[in-house]
Image (cartoon, rainbow over all chains, first blue to last red; front, side):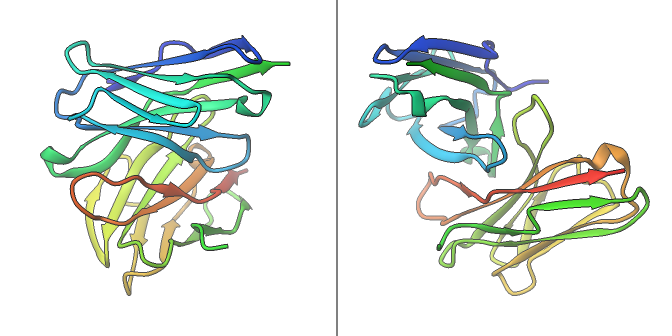
Length: 114
Length: 115
């Protein structure tokens, strides 16, 4: 049972345009959401997070939006740069339930073309 | 470099052998996690520690797997009688528990190949 779903395995955008990566979750106990970026042969790198008390969090070129009623979040990267090419993982945790583990989606491979 | 450190980076072992991986978390972090990642999948939770206490274990962690964090600092993950299905990237992460929400920082992983 996939509690965190990233339905697009890949996404290709042009440099300078916006990249939008989507993530859906099913567990209503999740209250903290994170995005990680992963290059081949490296561990995931933390990018940005959002708690359930917010609907938007911004950090430079990266913005995460949370729609709790739809159980949906998205990561916007603008403008996209070739160095953003990587696999992006959405993760969620449910601290209210007492579990500190992160549940990850399967990832979306982003390719930013020069 | 004060990030999460994992050793070794790569391990090739024969089926049936035991292997042990080490993780050194960021020094002030009190939580330490182990995850496993296979091709095309996201990281899957295995277990986590708060200080030296192992607080949660996934059912993925069969009795061939054991993890320790004896002094609340570094951690080891041992796999006994390895099987080909154990081939994966083993990731360690750490975080500082403060308040309700905290991000975890990952090491570069140990890639295990069982032949």
